[in-house]
Length: 296
Image (cartoon, rainbow, N blue to C red):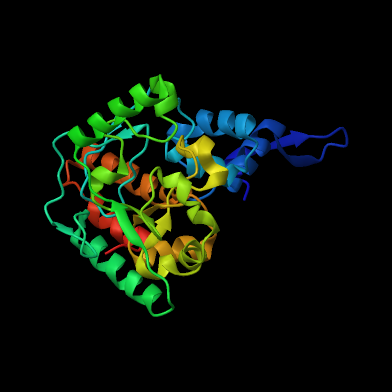
């Protein structure tokens, strides 16, 4: 729709007046009309740059930039201020507080692996459904503290020879999903290193790709998005986001979590922050995110 404010009267040689709209104004208005609802004006220049650099659609550029996927890893880090939110996004550019420990951790599937209670319950239900079909998985790694993750990362540096090499498959302390208690590494059998299991070639993995969303789990680091996540493909790493959000991702074709989070969570957070700065209202992030993204 063209704003009347952009229309001007122009006199033609025959003395008749015509409505005229400037080309620049028309182009700007058309561009605004094409913007998706989750467009954040403050990110406008970043959207344009990312579209050109990554050759993606405007919608995907907005989603991914909203999740800071356009930024150089570990150079523009945001401290996560609601680490307990079920839908928290933890990446190389979004860091958990070093003292964050989930308050409802428990052992899962008869192992020493710890997860948040709701995630552990869901994993056990999912494993039970797999067993009904002659399959099952073993949790290999779940919750890790900030300090355990730091030790692991330091070990990887010694093994691989550099921090850059280690970062391909290991998060720095504070940047690991495992610290949230919502992520789990699962295999059909315990194998070290995990990649040696070739889990992606198993019937167990096929079952998960078809059904994991029903229990609230998503594949967090898919093979086609290593440039977005910064991690190598990990078919064993599954993240609990709740059945509603996981099903919405599956049905909506969101093939990496950053896209889903960037469409729903980032605008909610930005709106809450604006309300806080202008009205001084209480922080509403958690409830708003759960409402918009289908979590509980």
